Image (cartoon, rainbow, N blue to C red; front, side, top):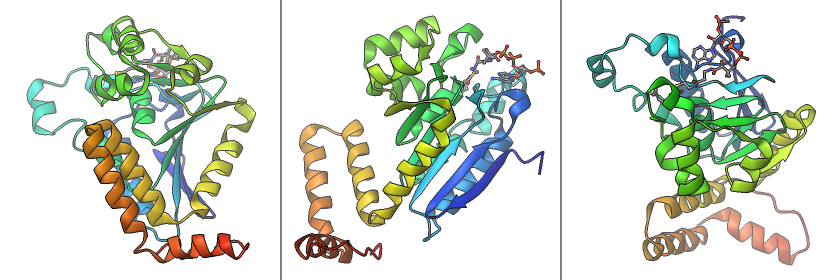
Length: 258
Ligand code: CO8
């Protein structure tokens, strides 16, 4: 339906969520973020899905939080409704790999949504910015925390304090995105990547995601300890034994995601 804020479809073992407020450049309002969170959790709980893609339009992944919705909110409005934490952070509960396919504007909350994904594939047209300072706001959906972890303090301060936008190539160079592809091939390349990831053993993918994310949060010693327990746990999985035996037998593994 034309007024659906997101569109959800599946392609094999990949769930694809398209942000769908084109007139507002996919500005992220509460209803859209509620719908996105619900779709993410539904795909995460669907045993037939191994990876999730979030994408926007050719012009905008998302131009940020909805400024029109926020303009007259009071402190009590956002405090009592737990703005951002209440629905934007649902993505943190998703255990399967989530890939952002970004063309055009990824601004403010749109850039922060991409940063919250596990991988970002950028079209050549992609532009990443945290321009909240222009509104006398701040990147409050994880931007001040995830951006410096992704690209370092110097570049993050530049983007947050000056509202400087990064081109896709700069974002690639600085480590904000995983790869840059031609616009016409964005979805095709992202789906190929997601499909490939989704063929692997799901519990192994989830363990890797959890371990890499732990690197952002923990000391090296604690992170290595966590990784080691995850590695040991792989020996309790059917798929790891299947994967190793298939290699030795020179055949393709058949994973049951167990
Ligand atoms: N919110 C609401 N509406 C928007 C937004 C937005 N973020 N961005 C664009 N729109 C609307 C425009 O108002 C316009 O609507 P209309 O046609 O009714 O006038 C329509 O989308 C098309 O936009 P433009 O005409 O401006 O399109 P241009 O191609 O000329 O410009 C830009 C594109 C450069 C992306 C421009 O729209 C722009 O600068 N948008 C705002 C970008 C921005 O500041 N984003 C940050 C928002 S704040 C945020 O995301 C914070 C999240 C963190 C948590 C909350 C703390 C604030």
